[in-house]
Every structure is written in structure tokens, then in C-alpha cells.
Image 1 (tube, rainbow, N blue to C red):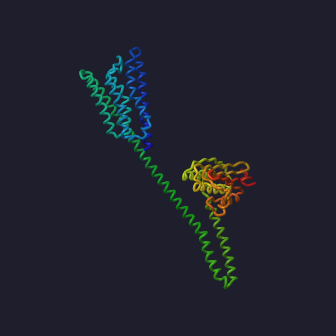
Image 2: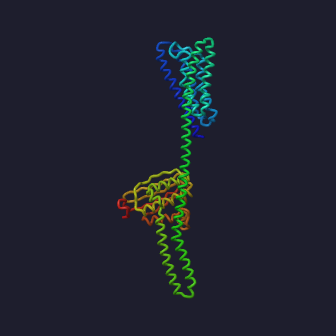
Amino acid sequence: MQNDSLELMRVFRTAAWIWIGYLVSLAVMDRFIYPGGPLEPVLWYHLINGAPALLFVGLSYLKWLKTRPQAAMIPWMILLISIVPILLNHLLDLRLPAAPLANVEGMVLRQLPVMFVGLALIAWRYPLWMVLFYTVFTCAFEWVMISIRIAFDPDRQLLFYFVIAIRTISLAVVGIFVSQLIARLRRQQEALQAANQELAHYASTLETLAVSRERNRLARELHDTLAHTLSGLSVQLETVKAYWAVQPETAYQLLAQSLAITRSGLDETRRALRSLRASPLEDLGLRLALQQMAESAAGRAPLQLHLALSDKSLAPDVEQCLYRVAQEAIENVVRHARAQNLTVQFTVNDQQIVLVIEDDGVGTDQSAAPRSQEEQGGHFGLRGMRERAQLAGGQLTVSSQPGQGTRVQLLIEGYRHDQNRHL
């Protein structure tokens, strides 16, 4: 509804300035038509014709046009641009000095461009039959006005009827053409919207299928590694339990086999986890992966996002650490911080890497129990982030105060970007 109101304002403002531009051009033309004649009638003519044009401009810029029902507003605006100029010309009966287009027929032709503007507004908003009705109505209205004004001059009436007939045909031809163009444009817009909806549905279906396939792949990986290993280990341990008191030597042998199965299963699990490494890093690279993750989180919260990300590539294990730490910190902001702003900074210098995740949320009082949340597995996940940072040779620092937000910084020093390894 708001978009329709904005479109309404733009269309009427365009029509208003076209009307004003035509009147200014007409005034310039009259300046050359009446170079030495009396200027007062010409001036009055343009002032009176310019008054409804200025009123139309003012109405098109009023704020209440955004909220007023369009169905009630449009006819009055079209009536103002189409009927009022005709009515003023005939009621005031301005007598211009003798010149081209100064007679009654000339006054009729002078209004033709303005009539075309009203015709375009009708064709833009209403169906073809309304365009034809507008053409017949405006011409019939002026027919009546002229017939009353020159009722005792049959010759001039005949000339006027000829002019009216030409104008009626012109308005009808242009109106039908414009109406057909607008109808065609709207059909194309509707077809485009339908195509966009189908495309969005198709993309959603593909995404759902991709997620389903990925879940099936994860299920297969877990079934082939953890499920098989744990199932075999369970059977083996049950056997160890049965032999423990009867044949200790056999129980020890079975226990050794269980340990071997456990190590093999652990190796297989690690291999599967390596194959399930975060795909955004492989597909997008670290900078775009961080950007995509932050934008997705900011859209869900919602948060005002501030990004400053370096586009330099690093060693895979370092990128994995940075991505996972950022993922944990950003999820904490989304779930617990109740923040309005989120800042994600990632910089790479010659000797260090710095990742900063900062928010302006509720924060926490770290001085009261600085490590209790880590030890109890609290929702901040600091313990896991610190372990990842240590594995990458970095240091994780968390600064937070109640009501002042939280700042998580991962600093990796002694890193040379050109060699992609730690010094």
C-alpha cells in the first residue's frame, strides 16, 4: 500500500510539472505573438490558467496524499487538470488581442496538451472504457460550453464542431494507444512477479533438497564411523564383562581388542569430521564466509552490522580457528546479548592476526566469577573458544561489563602471511 501511494505521488508530480512546463512554454510563445500589443489580457489569461496548475502542484506534494484513499483522490486531481482550465476559459471570457490562437477555436486547441496529460492519468489508472468515457465527456462538456457561448453564430458553431471532432479523434487514438501500452506493461510486470515467485520457490526447493542431501550424507558418515565403532565396542565390552571373573586372560585380550577398535573408530571419526569441515571456507574464503555469517546473524537478531574484514588468505587450520571462534561469539551475541549493534573486525598485519567480535548488549560481570561459566559449560562457550585459540597459537581475550556490551578478541602473534606458517 505504501508503494502504491509513493507511485501515486510520483505520477501526479510528473503530471504537475508537465502542466507547468507547458504553460511556461505557452507564455513564451505568446510573448512573440503579442510583441507590441496590450499585455494585460495576456497576463490575466496566464495567471488564471496557471492558478489551477499551481494548485495541482501543491496537492501533489501534500503529505496527506500518502494516506488518503487513492480511489477518492485520483478523480478530483484528474478533474482539476482537465475540466477546470476549460471552465475558466469560458466563464471568464478573456478577450485576447487579435492573433493566432486568440479566438475561441484557438482557446480549444490551447487546452489540447493539458487534455493529453489528463488522458495519460486516466489510462495509467483505469481501463480502456474509462479512457473513452473521459474523451467523450471532456469534448461534450466543451461542446456545451461553446454552444452556450456562441449560440447566435451558426457559422462559428460549425467551425467549432469541426475542431471538437478533430480533438475527440485525437484523444481517442492517443488514449487507446497509451491504454494498450500500459496494459501490456502491467501484464509484463505480473508475468515478471510470477516468474520471480516461481524462481524463489525453485531456489527454496533446491535449498531444501541440498539440506536434505547433506543430512543424509552426515547420517551415512556417522553410521559408517561412530555407529559401527560403538556397536562393535559395545559387543566387545559385553564379552569382556562376561569373561572378567571366569577367564581374566581372555578378558584382557578382549579388552586390548576393544582399545584397538576404539582407536580405529577415533581415526575414522576424525577423518569424517575433516571431510565435514565448514564448507563456507572452502566455497567462499574466510572474508566472504565471515561476512555471510555475520549478515545472516544480523538479519536474524536483528542487529546493525559493522564490518571491517581483510581479504588475505591464511593457512587452513588458522582460518578454521578464526571462523569457528567468530561463529561461537556471534551466536552468543544473537542468543544472549540483546544488543543493537554488532561489530566484526578481521585484520592481518605482517606479524599478527586480530579478530574482534564486539556488541553493545547487556554484557556480564566477569569480576564476580571470572571462570565459573567456563567450568560449568555456560552458554558463552569460552572454554571451547580458548582451546581453539590455543591450538592455533593465539590468545583469546574477553572484555565485558554489565550494560556495556562484550568484546571478544582473538590475537595470533608471530604469524607471517607470506609463508602461511607460524614463526
